[in-house]
Amino acid sequence: MALVPQEGVGLRWFRSRENLPLITTIGVFILLYLLAGWKFHGFFSTRVPLNLLSDNAFLGVVAVGLTFVILSGGIDLSVGSMVGLSGILLAHLIAHLHWHPMLAMAAVLCVGIVIGTFHGILVAKFGIAPFLATLGGLFFCRGAALWISQESIDIDHPFFKKLALFSILLPGAASVTVGTIVLVLAVAFGVWVGKHTLFGRTVLAIGGNKTSAGLMGLRVDSTLIRIYAVSGFCSALGGILYAIYTSSGNAVSGTGMELDAIAAVVIGGTLLSGGYGSVLGSFIGTLILGIIQTAISYQGTLSSWWTKIAIGALLLIFMLLQRGLVRLTSRGTGSG
Image (cartoon, rainbow, N blue to C red; front, side, top):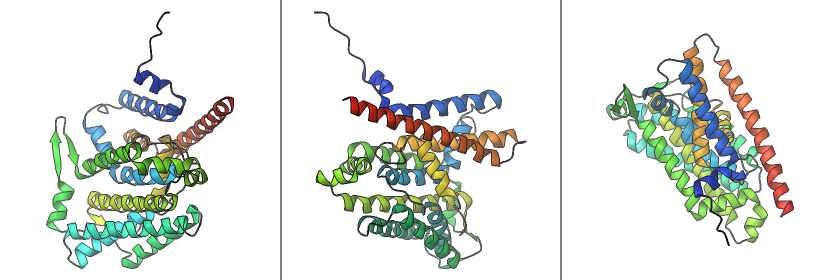
């Protein structure tokens, strides 16, 4: 009997119907990068990709936490307001109360975890819809930020300045900043958690079917609370990175960032209904948004509103793709 050669793991991954959204995201990223590099001189230099990472580090970190929320079938509308609250609180603690930046950062991260945990309790224990629970958090965080200060606060601490100016120089006038390092570490840790831990598998099970996950003996309520705590932590960390990026804190920072983060996650291939997606896809989705914004700024003659138009078009395309994927999966399940 003739032996049929088996497909390699890599080929099976590319041919898998479930990986279609992530493969599409990677393809869109490569296509946009090649088109931008063909049109704009210097886009292929090492400086541009590293600038993409540095300029979008805070959004990427926020998207990491939001990915787990959306994977569970939920939503977190408070992430943008949390960025503003974290930045202004950090600046207030350092500039006005004279805390050391490391202690102030630890306090800000704890605040993010507490607020995220509260959202999780509302969702898991009280059955409040995630949209409503986090919408309340959105208003609370923005109001608290404005209560701390309605004016921007400059951070003039020597240690904080070193963080803001820190860079590892690379050939081609490129440099690796603190934001880049934190983003890469956050994405790597998020990918590992999503693929190789019980928490990550439970998140996917909850997003697939919350009732079935409970019947399987999985700890649904405690996992939901941890999911929103992770989102609060990542949002606070994103606010810290934004403060480092701007060397200041501003209560209105992060306005609308929740929509950009959701767009990055969806463009990255995560289903809004939950149950499928990855942190890696959200990372690539963040870079796609960065490429669009950078290319439009290179063009110079186009308004910044074209960024929103392009993101909206991409979002619609990926939503249609997800709808087609759901139908194909359902049809395949029915045939089985």
